[in-house]
Length: 194
Ligand code: AMP
Image (cartoon, rainbow, N blue to C red):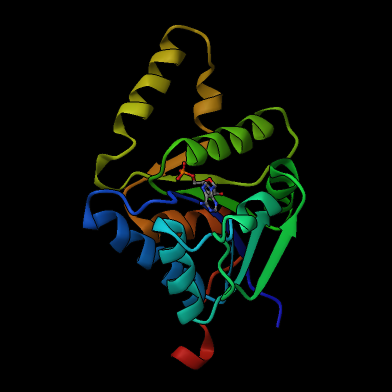
């Protein structure tokens, strides 16, 4: 059966310091699975990435992992994925992840997560896609970044409209519902779970 929606999650290959981060990663994966969705992600088994994927699989989601072969050689691939695509380059990976998603969601993470978030945001501002983008600001993790970005608007390097292309929230359920609706799709609890 075709998934009701597909969310691409960007997040840390490490778990982070606070248990809030791992808890929210479990909530996100579980929500996607329980609402008949598909998770697209980097295909790793470590950190928040592995936690989101494990929770999603457990809740019945179709999980698509996309990994460049250089990372597979480091044995970082999660062989539990429903589909694991091994691609040549990082660029191929990011293209496939973006194509397979209806919306994007960044959880706490490091430089890899930031790069992926900023790339899909840039692509959106240029009109390469019109898929919704969310930032899960759990535990205030992204407060400083959001403050800095608003300062870029004040300093006139960005327009307010660019900030409006992303949705930041600390509540995973509200954010996920908004992303699915924003993509023109419906997230309904799977019938067998009611
Ligand atoms: P980071 O936030 O620096 O931990 O990087 C995480 C993001 O970059 C993820 O969303 C992945 O797509 C990619 N990435 C970085 N490290 C790995 C890894 N060890 N395995 C899989 N993907 C990774």
